[in-house]
Image 1: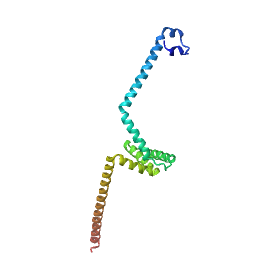
Image 2: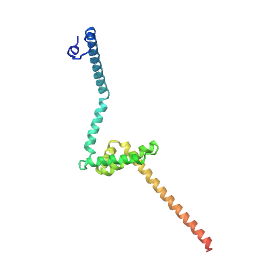
Image 3: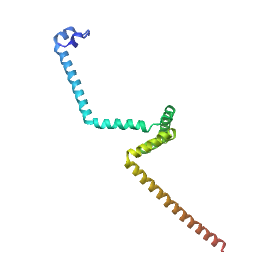
Image 4: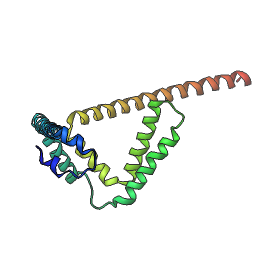
Length: 177
């Protein structure tokens, strides 16, 4: 008989307790097996993903040391970032789902960059040193943006000069010079 059954101070049907004393033992045995199975599964998961979790924890501790600036006040900044994110959500209220996510994310990131300038700069440097593919993609994007701006500028200059020439020709025709 289980000690749980003997210590239980429940005022239930005493006849039922006397007729089924094995029930408390079975319940206790079932609970013990479930507890052991869950503990075993937790250990197996820890062993299977422990390397990943330890690497993630190490990266987070390094990020805390390298990224977060102790000179910036966190309490009002965090509140401002939260308000900025909510404002982005309000701006995008009646938009489709991708626009909602994009506007909210951009508002939050922009507010974070404004309220925590040192931390955001350190975060940029941290991601570029830790993730070289991200740095290469950013440099490629910057190069493409510069080329697009140069092409747009040359096109605008060319079409502006054509429009000026055409306008001058029209003026000359009107006044027959």
